[in-house]
Length: 199
Length: 199
Image (tube, rainbow over all chains, first blue to last red; front, top):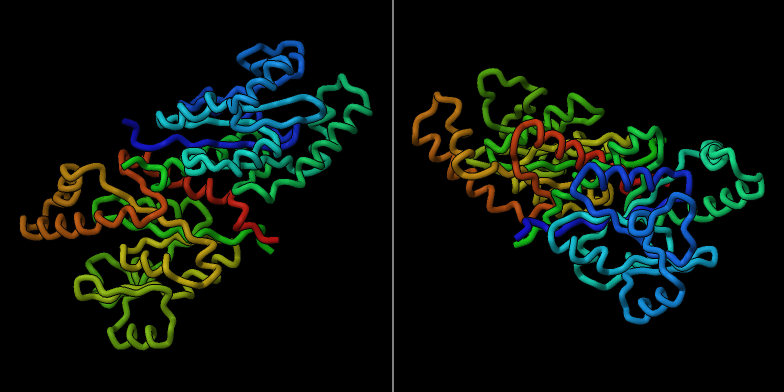
C-alpha cells in the first residue's frame, strides 16, 4: 500500500511560458507520470505517437468522448484535445504523481470534476511569461515563422494569460533554473500535505 | 508595495524532531523573520534574551496578555509561553515570511485566529521524528540527563505527536539535509500561491 495518493499537477500557460519544458523535465527526473494527451490534429514533424500525443481520428475521439473515457476534452483552434482517465486515475491511486500539460479550458474541466480522487489530488499552476516583450521574443525566437503567424500566436498567448487568476498557484517565469527549482519545490512541498496521506 | 503578503509558517513537533534546527536555518538563509517567543521560565545556560526568547516576568506576561498583545499564548509544564502580535503582523504585511516554532497548543490558537491576514498567511507543519527508537536515541543523545528525565521527555514527545493530524502538512524526519530540502520546498512552493498575491 502506498503511503499517500499521488498529486495531480495541472500546468497551463501560453506558448512561450516554458511550461512544457518544466513538465517534461520533472517527469524525467522524478517518479512522476507525464500524462500524454490525445489530439485529432495531425502530427507535426518530429512528433511521435504515444510520446508527444496519442493521435486519434475524429471518429475515434468522438467515440471515446461518448464512452466517457475522457477526464477532460476541449476544442482549440478547430482541433480536439483531451486526457483519458486511464492516463491519470490508476497512477494517483498507486501514489504516483501525474503531471498534465493542458490549456485553460481543460484545466477548468479538471477543476470542476467531482471525482473525489481528482479533487483531493489536484494542484493547479499557471506559468506566466515574465512580460510581453520577453514573450514576443520567445514566440519569435524560432525564426522560421511569418509576422502574421507570430502575431496570431501572441494574440492567443495574451488571451490565455487572462486566466491566471483562476489557478491556485502562479509561477512568474524567470530563468529556466529558477523556474524549475520553484516548480519542483511546489511538488515536493505538496507531498507533505496531510489530507493526501492514506490511513 | 510588496507583490504578496508573507507566509506565516507555523512549525510544531516534539523535542527531538529537529524542528528548531530547521526553523533557525531557514531564517538565516532566506529573508524570513524568525519569531521570538516570550516565556516566563528562567533562561537556561547559554540562552540569550531577544535571541532565544524574550524572558518576561509573570507580572509583565500577564499584563501583556490583558492588553491583547499576544497572538497566542499557553501554559506548558507550569511556564507561560506566547507570541506577540508585533513579532508577526508587520512582517507579513511587508511581504516577509515569518517562521514560528511553537507547541501544539499555540498552533491551535493561531489556526483558530480570526484575523484575516493571519488566516490567509498561515501554513502549518508538524515535524515528526522517524520512529520511537530514533526519537529515544535523539532525546537521550545529550548524555547528561537521568533516565527519569529522559522518560519524562519521551512521554511529553509522544503526547505531542498525537496532534499531527490537526496540521495541514507533515514532515516525517529523515536526514537533516532531506528534511531541510523538503522544509524549504514547502516555503518556496507556497510563495506561488495566488490567494496571497496583492492586487
